[in-house]
Length: 164
Image 1 (cartoon, rainbow, N blue to C red):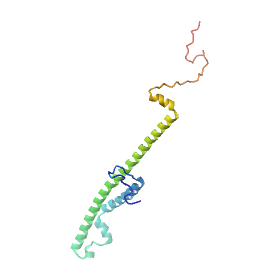
Image 2: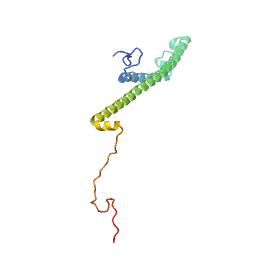
Image 3: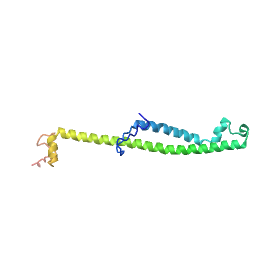
Image 4: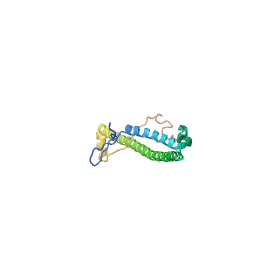
């Protein structure tokens, strides 16, 4: 699968596309993890991170200009990394939305296709009923229930004669 295999135009007008949800998910997951790591890294003080490496102290650099340059670079680098993380979060959110839309659409299309198959199966199994319904000839189904009381006994819907 090539790098662009998730979206392959089939027509010159771009009207038909093929997508693979698993491939899109394989992009979204690591991008989200990388974004979280970048956000965490950018959130920490760059000076504190570099102090651990002992590169930006005056006694190690030997000049205020170098120390200031390192501190300025680290501040800008942290800010830039935060901006990249912001943009990557938008991309991850959009990609997740697209994945969800594809999954919902697949589910709806599969459901509608199943309903069409079931309707066709019903029509194939009941050709006379389908023909009659097609011409508006329908009748209500009569439901017969078993009688539980013998005729003439109370409880079967008949009224008893008053005593004489």
